[in-house]
Amino acid sequence: MAFCGCDSTLGNTGVPNKQRVVSAGVGLIAVPLKADDGTFNRVAATDVIDQAYLDARVNDEDESKRWYPIGRVDFRNQDDVRADPTTESFSDGGSAITQQGVRTYTGWLIDYSPAYIDQLQALRCRDFGLYTISECIDLTGSISTDGNFLNPVKVNKASWEPRYIKATPTVSAKIQLNFEFDQIESDQNLRVIQASEITGNLEDIEGLLPLTAAISGESATGFVAALTVDFDIFLDAEKTKVIGWVLADFALQNKTSNTSITITSVTEAPDGTYTFVIPSQTSADVLELTNLKTSGLKPGFGLKQEIIVP
Amino acid sequence: MQIGRTYFNEEAVKDMTLNEFKESHKSILKGENIEKIYNKLTGSGKSKKIERKENPE
Image (tube, rainbow over all chains, first blue to last red; front, side):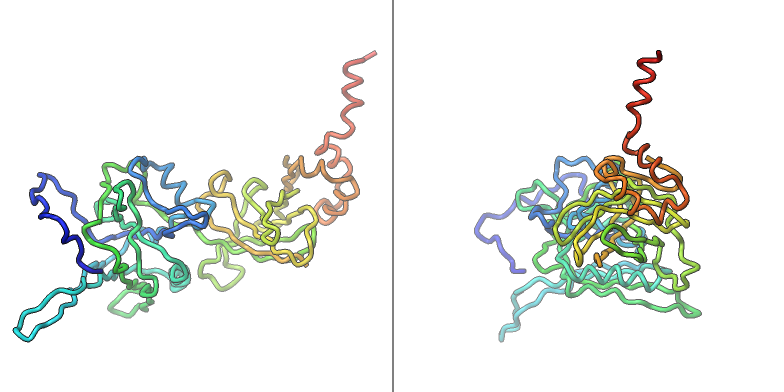
């Protein structure tokens, strides 16, 4: 990031009585910078941040538009600082700043399972940014050039490093998250939506709970899916079964033909095991079973399972 | 429509013949009267009842 803007007069340096300061985030919300349809994921200045707004972002059926809160707004020992700038030294002892320092973040998620590393590492695969949530439950992002949007602050995804620290007699188990914000981001663009301006419950915002579907009995006209909350439990008998779901909770897509499949029937027997009957599909087509999050009855869960038609 | 532990999409069932319905649900609706369920889901067989109500004599 170079220092620009020397083509004008000095800016007026007065300040209002009340200013909005930025804190290192105790909560981080990862957001893809751009959706698959080419639109930018950002908060508009005209948006109303109520519970419906937050629910819609977290449960968005389109993964490329979804918000992914990291952990439970419970980062500890967070450190969010910009390093000293790069300078060039001259023979007379003077120097010139040539580049701003990198802003780095470090934070701990205490008593988290190592399995959560898997979810975090997935973020390295896509350009994304972060909205941060302060201890005061303010939401911070980066203002767009036209001033009409609050963008997630771009992260240098290559620097994204979740690291597991095991418990010892003197320290608790934790995930330490280290990363750099992108050098294109400038601190002067950070803007805060204060907690008083957000009617939704940002303090308790959480990402979707990942589910696992063990698929069996595949045929052209159906399959069986045993649904469990399979976060970090090894023994099958101990896994929590997902029970009581109905036809309206599921969606099925033929990924090969990119068409939606109308499920004919769903039968739950035994608990947590669902038999699906569907119209006949072409051999070798790839289907994707998901749960409806916004129009269905099961927000808060993230089911995504591929099935290959035999 | 829910019948037992099975949730049906009635419109999807209407696109099936009785034989197709029987074949696709034989492992689920064991021992049950599949034809009766099919008729219930598709509305088949209702017309006669309606005729009797409208023309009781």
